Amino acid sequence: MSVPCDADVHNVSWLEHFPQARRSAVVNLFHYSVRAGASHPDAVLLAVTHEVRRRLAWCRDPAQHAPFEQVRAALQSAHAEALAYAESVLAWESLPADERERRKAARAREYQREHMRRQPPTDKQLGYIRSLGYSGPHPADRLAASELIDQLLQRKSLL
Image (cartoon, rainbow, N blue to C red):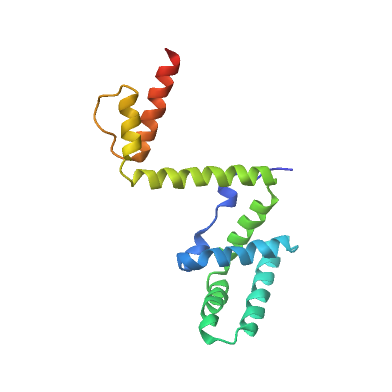
């Protein structure tokens, strides 16, 4: 079986139709459809549409209708993007579980690194850097401090 490359499983432009806080719910509609047996992009969209209609029929509170109406409207107005997203979900779900976990961990590391870039170094990091004998300029952020610590430890282990 051919394993799709990262580009095949990260077609998320369709999700930009939704507020960040609602995207996970939309993602779940697609993934649940595939896990329930939809095996072609058109079948995924049909299953998602059916689930959206079912949930709209369930909702008694009109305020709860809005997110589902938004999904229904986006399925119609951005059909090609929704199909492409369905293809990416099918590709993702076809990956072996260990490969999905590896890719999720790699993405998580990148998010963590980005977060660390926005934070100043901690006092513990700075103290540890000094204890390793470093006397140069302070690192600009937590990521730089972490990388400096790794370099200092690596040099120390080579001695």
